[in-house]
Image (cartoon, rainbow, N blue to C red; front, side):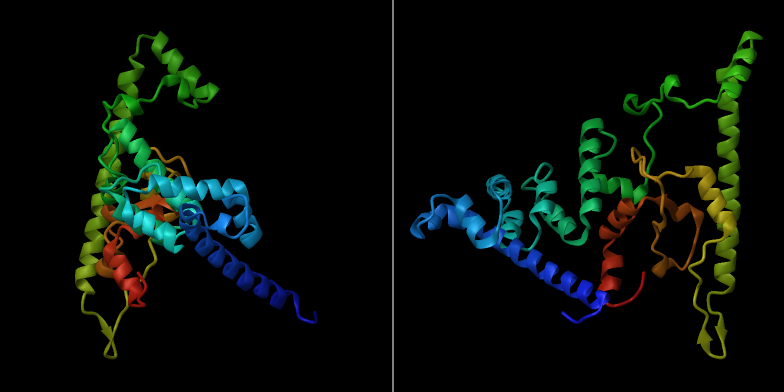
Amino acid sequence: MKISDEKLYELCKVYGERARFWRQKFAGLLPEVYKRRLFEKKGMNSIFEFAKKLAGMNEKHVRRVLNIEERFRDKPILKGMLENGDISINKLARVVSVATPDNQLFWAAQAKVLFQGALETLVRDQKVSTENTISSTAVDHMNGLQQPKSDDKSVRVHTNQLNLSPEVHKKLLELQQKGIDVNTLLLEFLEKREQEITEEKKRIAEEIEQHKEFNHDAVFYGVPIKKSRYISASTKALLAKEFGTKCAVPQCKKQAQEIHHTNRFSLSKSHNPYFLAPLCKEHHQIAHSIDVKFYEKRAGGRES
């Protein structure tokens, strides 16, 4: 075969994608094949032999398909997606544990737009949310990015979980031995820190709004000046001070990789820190997936 490595790789990707697509479609037919006992009519001993001969599908995968179909019996939307081969079995397997007749439309939509990693994260959020009663749904996390209540027993931090350096531990112990209430001391420090963040956020937000108002109708030789997507260093520093290096969604321990505009930038044209939050890759995609305006714009070919 006289083709370049890149061309060979591209062909592998194309054929591989087609193979996955048709395998997905084939898997969706298996529940009906099983009901009709079609494999017996074609001289085969089992549905597993049928799937292996026709599509090279192993027994574990076939059992998974049949199990998911059974659990979707009262969820016609998801069941239809399985039978039509609209969504991969791996994705449907992720949502089967949280899907109900009432929320099946939501999970069907999320399975369509989210990558598998993000879908896994959203399912996990839903389970944690239900178990700890932090919020009614995982969607609530993304709408407000609210923090858990301080008196919530499920999110209390134990002192043995704090990663204190020997030097800090020594100084706190010395202060305590002098009769100084280190709890009050630390609370005062934390309250001062929160106040500083609040004041800095207010200052930056006011400057941004003033600048936005001043340049609202700015043009250059009759051409409107496009608002920059660049987030200032001071705003990034403020977010780092407020949220640290981790994702802002409660319970998520992943590193933040994106700064999300909870008030869509393509609509607001603003980097107001009150509407910014650092998110991991998965939660950033989840945030966009539930933003209807974002998808309406993307469907229209406009960046958001």
